Structure formats: C-alpha cells, structure tokens
Length: 429
Image (cartoon, rainbow, N blue to C red; front, side, top):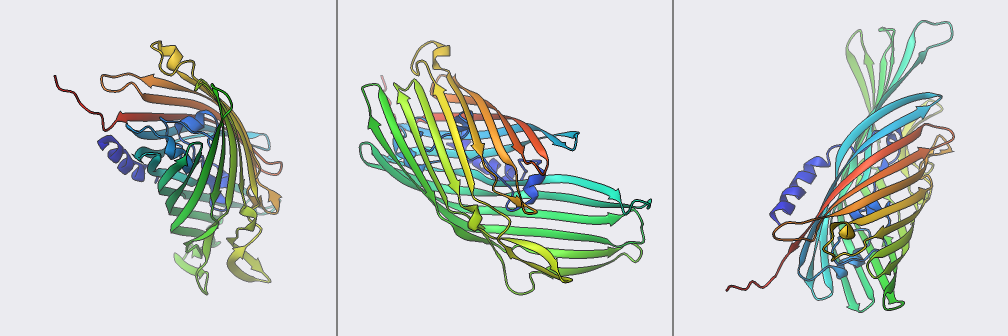
C-alpha cells in the first residue's frame, strides 16, 4: 500500500512530461492516449469485455466486481519509444520516454469492487521548424518554428457491482487536469523585419463520467463468453483557451501583444464515446477478444485563429475534428496459471488495431492509425506472494496520411502488477 501511495505521488510529477514527439499533436487536444493497463497493452488495447480476478481493467469499470476478495492490486506502467518521421523522401528519428499510468483496485464488499488511479487522456509534444526563401530571387529566408508541450490527464475513482451472477455494471468518476502551450513563431533572416508569434494555451480543470457493463454467459464447463459495453458522456471541460499574437521589433526590442478572445470565455469539449466488446475465455488458459469504440468528435468544436477580410478572430470552429472509429483484436494464452513450472505460468499476448482519423487538417483527413503488439506476463516469486506479474510488451504504430507526414513508432511498454494479500487470517503456533 505504501508503494502504491509513493507511486501515485511520483506519477503526478511524471505526467508533466510529454509522451509524444508527433507534429500531429499540434492540432486539437493532441494525440489520443492509450488508456489500457499493462495487460491490455499486450493485447493492443483490447479490454472492454476483459474480466479477471487478478487485474485492474479501467477500460470497463464493471470489471472491478471480479477482483479477488483477499487482494489489493496495484499496476504501474511506463513506456519508451522511437519514432521515425518521413516526408518527401526525408527521414528523421526521435525518441522519448514517459510515466504512463498508475491504477489500483480491491474488493470493498461481496461482489463490489473499487478502483482508483491516474490515466493519460491526450498528449502534446513537438518541436520543429521549416525554412524557405522569401521568393525565388531573394537571398533572405523565412522560418516558421512550431513548439508545443502538455497534455490532459485523468485521476479517477470507480466502482463495479455484480448484483447477480453474470451481470455487472460500474462507473468511473474522473477529474481532468492539464492543458497545452503551443507557439508558432515566424521570423526572417533580415533583422529589420518584425517577428510574429502566436501563443496558444489552455488550462483544463473539470470532471467526466464513464459507465460500463458486462454480461457473462457460460457456454460449457470450460468456456465463457463476456459481452462488454461502455459509455462516456459528452461535456464541456472549460480550459479557457486563449491566443496571443505578438509582434516583436528586433531593432527597438518592443513587443506589441493582442490577446484573444476579446469577448467572453471559450470552452474546450470532449466527445460522447461508445464502446463494445466480446471476449471468449477457455478454462482461463486462452482468451480472445475483439473491441470496437466510437468517439463522436465530429460534433465537437475547437477554437481557431483566422483572418477574414483583414479582420482577425479566435473563435470556436467545427472543422477541426471528425468521428473516430477504432477496431481491436487481441488474445492472451497462459498454459497453466497455477502450475509449478515457470514457463507454464507465463502469459503470452498479441493484438492488432486500426483507427480512423479524428483530425481534419486544412480540410484534409488527418492520419489513420494501424498498430500491432506482442507481450508477456512474467510471474514474480518472493517469500510473501507469488501472484505479482511483470508485464512487458512491444508495440508498432504507423500513423499515415496521404497529404502529410508519415510516422512509424516502435514502443516498449513495461508494467508491474503488484498483487498483495489483504485480510488473511494469521495462525500462530
């Protein structure tokens, strides 16, 4: 328990670091983060119908009802990644690492489970520049520099209840915090020309609620089929997004700043989300699942700076997003969970996924996403517990758009699931 509290405290500081280098994170709320825990990441995000006694599955709060009665489960994860960017025949590599998530769960009462933790929601992180000649005959250069950092994170408390066998439902009540700081700086090699910068920022502090249910049917003595469903509310999350346009004279060193919006406060927004999944479980040895999720970003507005007839404005626009669909398929194999042979207790995982774009960039579709993963769950043995697991997975993600940059990311996810025994009765001889 003490380890869990310390890790939660460390996570708050760790989430200040960006988990991406993608130029696509300069749009909207940023790159949508993977919210699965260490098990789900091995299956490439599958988890809506995942239901196990020894894991915390925050993707569907109904799963908390399955947590063992004598367990306190604590799952902490981090990742490191290497990304290759490709555009017009040019390639560039970038790498980074981040603290991903911290979740915990335990049984509060019979058929009633509780979970809490910190999860990522979006990530913002990029730094690049583009230079070109002012005109074909000029020796002067015009440079645009783009930088950004930030992201939105969620701390949540959830419950899952199984009122009767085979049916469970639950909720996650979350608090979103974070935001972004983005800068676009236009400068000239001619030191007599003013530098023009646009600085965008937002600071989110608001609540969100998600619901889930799971229906489990026993098909035979060894086979179970679980149907899972999730629903997240659409809501405005504030943030007070602002834009400052700064003109700087390098000769006089005087800045002229105009702030937007001039009238009233703008609100950021998150979409309604719906998810569904199926998972087949054979004797606890083989689990195969499929998920579908829908995020209605097409109905969400985002502030945009535009100049029409020489009149600048910063107001909500409805051409930034589009609806996002994601399909995932994953599997886990564990030959014998309680075997004395080490290799029989190892969990082998794999998954693939495809997601449609959620961004519109200059009227064109943003990047679609194709990914695949392989992972292992390695049991940890010590003198007190033999139920803790080291989860390691490798994931390949390709983001591609016909009009824009291509990204190929290789990511290593490492998660450690502590499974402590609580409420045991000690016998003194």
